[in-house]
Length: 372
Image (cartoon, rainbow, N blue to C red):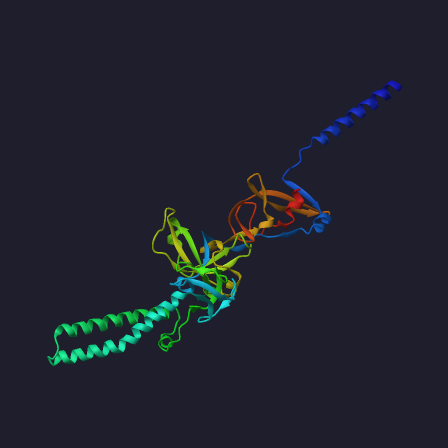
C-alpha cells in the first residue's frame, strides 16, 4: 500500500512539473501590449482617431535678411580729414539730413580760397568778354582778341562751376564763401533715415577718401534674398507663402511671401534668386545679414494623419498602437506598422492600411511610456 502511494505521489509531481513547463513556454503575441487603467491615467495617455489634415508641398531654400540697395547707405568723404566730433553709436537711429559727424582738414580751406579767387575774376572776365564781343561785332577789334576774351571767360566759368560743386559735396555754402566766411571744418549729414549698423569713426581719427565712415540701413525695408535650385524654378510663383527660421538665433517660424523671381541662373550652383517680402510685425526682430532657412509653399493637400507623438519609430520602421480591447480595467494595444508620407509641424500623414482608417482608435499620447 505504501509503495502504491509513493508511486501516485511521484506521478502527480511529474504531471505538475510538466504542466508548469508547458505554461512557461506558451507563445505570447509580441504585438500586443497591455496597460492598466491606473497606468493609463497616471502618465496622461490619450486615445484618438486619425483625422484629415492639410499638408503643404514645399521647396527648400536658404539665404539671408537684406535691404534693397536704395535703402542702404555707406557714408564716405571724397576728401579725407580728421574726425573733429561725433556722438553716434551702432544702433542709433538717425533721420535724413541729421548731422552725423564733422571732419577737419586745411585742404577744405584751399578749395574755398581757389573758388573765391575764381569768383572774384568772373565779373571782370565776363565784362571783358562782352566788351570784346561788341567791338568785334562793330569790326573795331580783331577776332583774335575776341576769341581770347571768350576763352578766358569760359575757362573761368568752368572752373567756377566745378569748384562750386565741390563745395556743395563738402556741404560748404558757396554764398558764404563769396562773403569771405571760410572754414576748415565740414559736416557730414545723413542721406537717408534709418539705423546705424557700422561705425568706423572716433575722435581724432584720420579718414581717407575711400574709407567707409559709417553705414545706415532702413530696417523697415528688410526683405529676404533666397536661392533655389534650377530644378525647382518652375514651381515658384509670385505671392506664394514662405515659412522660414533663423537657425542661429531662434526656433521661431516666421512668415514671408514671394515678391520677385529671378530671370537668370547664377553661379556654379545653378541657383535662382528669390526676393521675398516680410510681415511688418517681425521686421524689428530681424537684422540684416542673418542667415535663414526657408520653405516655399508651392502646393497643398488633405490627407489622413496622426499627431507626431502618436508615431513609434523602431529600427527604421514606423508603428502605431491600435486599441485592441478595453475590459476588466486593462487596455490592450496592438502594434501595427504604418507607412508615412508628408509631415507638418504637428502631424504626420499615414498611408491608409487595412487595419488603420479614420475610425481606428489609436494611442495618441504616452506611446513611449507604454513601450519603454
